[in-house]
Length: 254
Length: 254
Image (cartoon, rainbow over all chains, first blue to last red; front, top):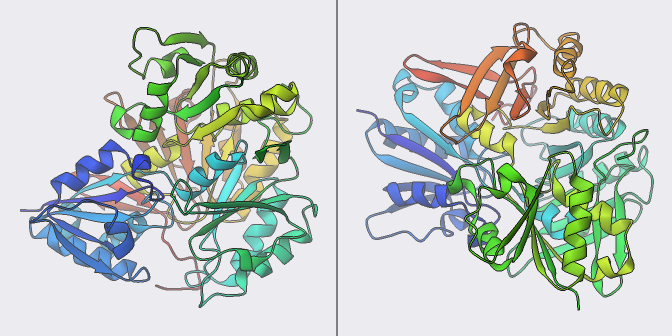
């Protein structure tokens, strides 16, 4: 008798940005699998069991959760942000795709959440107000030459670019290299937003130009948003600048 | 004395997918501006005033809301989904950018929400599990040749493509044309998801191949997600198929 497997997103960390749907799913589960800091965002009750593991063990975590759900448990896999964006929903699907038939009978329920780029964008204005893309800068899971190609094509297409997993101790040079690549095709004054812990007490949001952006301003929890040639900055005197990308593109007015 | 302007996202329509942060913002505002069906998602109290307008009057609505906030009111502009994704946050920023200086003094608070592509993706698995883009198919605000170029470059880059505003009575041919363009560069068996009203009682989620997808299956409330060459379908017998895009790309394993 198969159980149920929830895959939920907690949002970026501010409890008020986690949906009631995700809260309700967490309330029903008895076993929780996830990266410790994400599971810590839930207020678990006695009898709700935590299985925490490192952030780089997604597939092993997915398999462990599926085994428990296949045994009949109500299980909750916890992602930060949205579980479908560079997070656990794909790892769970990969495990099902390559696992025993019994895993296909599990009632899989993916519950969306506020992903980092939306939370960061909200704090600065509307940089994702027109066509955009989300690219993971991690070359653990794809070759660097594919990332280079995607950055160049995305910039050529006029898409605003949200970079996830921009930098880590094991991947120190990739973000700087991405900036160098994009400087060859985008104007030096293109706005670049570094957003960290959006909506949390330790929030840090900063805006640079592409010409002056330095990778060292980011860490692994930063979402970096690089504007298109259409992206604009509004100076507001006493209030922080706003950054937005107009809804219309060259050649059309409102 | 300037007031405050909230720009909130209600999510796709299921009340359990609207964040407590958005609910709290709505509770504080006294005047509401938005497309009627989105404002209807809020449970307004006596004394909270509705100003509803058509979905194609974003800039006029933004200006009206800013005028009231500049006069000292606590105002809430309501978007469906996320206000920063093809929605009101960019329209408000455009209005501020081109408006009187007093509008720059308003306390602008953008509150993120679950955007359609995340809600649709959650219902089918994890199609946005790797690099992806969001493109509006409306040529009201940009020339069609830019849209064509973006589709081709996005597909060439290997990005999964989420299409917003795919079709309407005034724009009947664009989605069919987008499929034709993408068929020239993507395999015929590439999964295409049509997601409408995700998470609501009237939800409709369907999966086709790019070769067989017909634009007539969409309406203006549909989000269409077109896979990359890496996107996979999992058959599950009695349960609906899952669609996901693996976290890794060709050349790297987990």
